[in-house]
Image 1 (cartoon, rainbow, N blue to C red):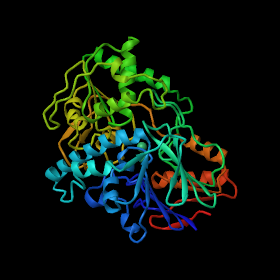
Image 2: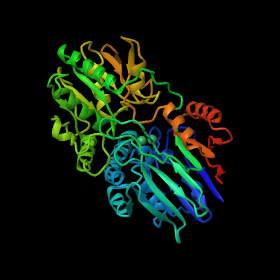
Image 3: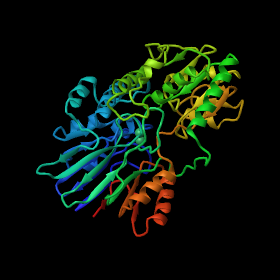
Length: 457
Ligand SMILES: [Zn+2]
Ligand SMILES: [Zn+2]
């Protein structure tokens, strides 16, 4: 019997992790950390693995909600093989070492006793056991050809992959991971299998989001260049809160291109920290990983001003400067959060949002505020000092996730017998289930409850 068990604690984009069992073979897909919870609460339901020891752990990509607790799982199951692409391994090391620092800071600032969940030294040890596989390379899982696995390019960030698993009986299970079918600026769109999939495990980030029918990425970039130029010409500062992995590299590349084409003035771009480290990895792999612009190295085309080394040091934004800084959701204690205190009160400044933000985050509070409304920047709406939203606030869509239509289209072409919906909030999963039931007659569409084993055959 082959089964799927959701180890993510709830129907949400949280600590993503899934268990596939096929007889005595057990594979864990992804080992994420919950972006909003702290301490042990941030782990997937690993207690469900007691007595069901996984032999293999496969990581789809290096975002923290997919890789953040891999060292914890590896320490629990040191015999398990760990598989990922080279890009995921290279970026994953930077992400996890940074995570040790973030956890240590949270222990000091917020008194999270369990942090850090692992140390730099322990991390060094477990990363030594990671095994890398190429896209398209078929690898064996378990003893005596237990199962076969293959990575497919997921087009989401550097190294991102979808994972094909084939059981001894020939059942083919495909997990999309996080996927983008369209080209981004640096990363080219997903190259996924187009047939012979029995079970599709699909991400649903945009399952309840409608994109404007007239959307064009180029137009969105043009609009962004205009917003930056106007602010700089009026003597304001531009704050662009970004995720360190993915959006930082895409946007830094585009800022360089804006300057090259004279679309924005040659203003200083402040950029650094984890985002800069990951950009280095992107550039190192420019020739050997799939690219929209093959061989292009971001740092060769754009100069930046490094950020202060000490994350807690005071930084006051200068007029006529651009700040491309994390975090994307402007979480408390991050640089984008601290800069917002200076940027928000002044009409001449701009905050440009370029990605998803959780409804409870400071970023969403600012997005949803009326002009002049007071907004607090703490980790809860009632926490932290209040600032008036007097600056310009604009949003742009450069998503690294497939649209709802693209997901439906893909599932429709693939015609799997079963679809398991993951990586979306309750509303997104529900909407996708209803739409897929209409589109895939006779197929079983599953919204997996945490901890329940669903039969896949
Ligand atoms: Zn991701
Ligand atoms: Zn994700």
